[in-house]
Length: 263
Image (cartoon, rainbow, N blue to C red):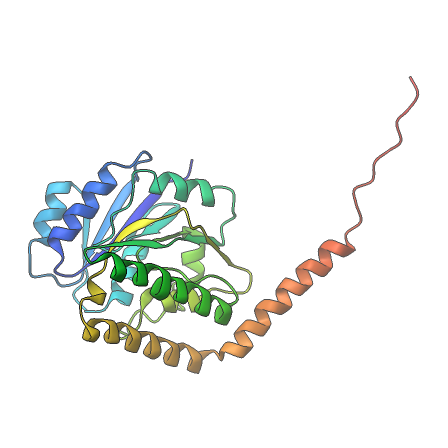
């Protein structure tokens, strides 16, 4: 059974972090380790971590990209699961993460959607179906695989080891999940599991300013990633590898079966 570390970057979100850690305490499959990356909090984050008995890594330089990378670097599990401080995973979340990754190979990640809470029914529906649903579909077409949703994903430690020097951990203006998704190599894959769900706060939709800042950050992330690696070239390489694999499977002869002897 693989070991699992859960990484949670946080900045001044102590009450939500406490709810997230309480939800992790109710998991049917307990994690071997929880790493909370305190990204310069000035609230009760340290006290919440101490009360819950989880590991706290302090990351003074602001930026979720650097905080997530620091958490993955510090984690010791064979599977690295990722939540936000406002994520509320259901009891079987880690059980399902383990089930989906246990036999998928060392270069396959898994992600799922969010069930938004803290706003009206219509706002939560739009957030789930238009915002996140549109993100998964539209960005998935651009990447050639489903993108990772930062509030709800997991990847094997060898996959992170292969990508850790590619992510823009020093750029505070990027979305860590989108940047990591873009760095995924042609020989890697992402499973999108609609049943791998977590609760997520709808607070980005409380104001146009909050929503606009997220859209701006997505634009900035793409601008940085596109300059380093044009999206067309990236997608072509992925399609070429997929085509070679299919051609190789077709060219492989079926295993020889010896004729049955006479007894």
